[in-house]
Image (tube, rainbow, N blue to C red; front, side):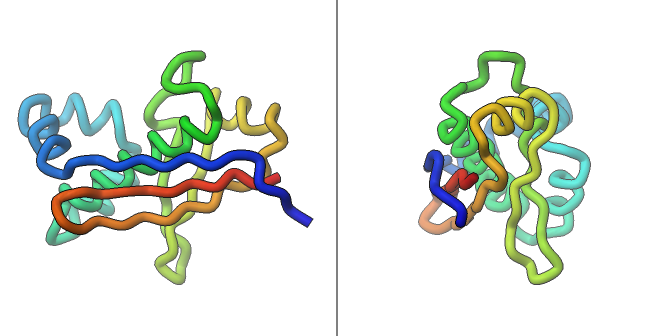
Length: 127
């Protein structure tokens, strides 16, 4: 039986993320999102909403891990991928994966949403 180890939630103002993208362009996108995340969003009508939800998911994961961005975790150590059903799933790599393993986290359940100019993500770490 799985048990809940931690929970993280984050909200992102979509316009603020769009501004960051406009100001820093590819440098920001490459630093914060994996090639697969960028490709997914580029094929969507509301690109900034999809990127903002993924950005919120990354922040929510770090809140669940209790680390913030210290300890050598990179933005791209946390990736949101889609299951064949279309449901989002968190994939960890690098230092984020090592930290999760040490905490006994086997999986991170994620829910994404965007409306009213904001994107949000809720992440539940289970082990």
